[in-house]
Image (cartoon, rainbow, N blue to C red; front, side, top):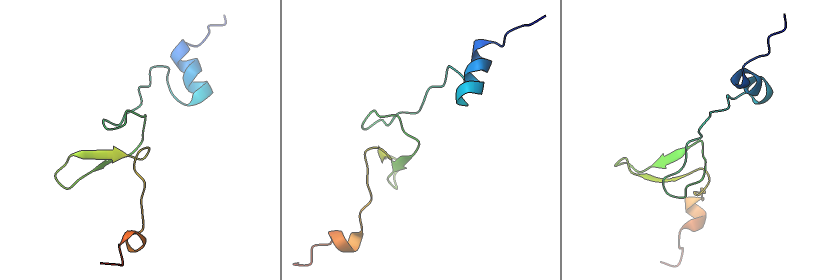
Length: 64
């Protein structure tokens, strides 16, 4: 008797994720993301999709 796997099992084997995966979204830009960035007071300020890092020494205004 050959019983096929359930759809979620087939999807998990093919992609590594079940069919009903709902990715987290950034509340700022709305993109699916893996990392959210928060300020010290706990407010989300962005994610790995909408925030980029910068070197503080390069960004500092040397004329002041």
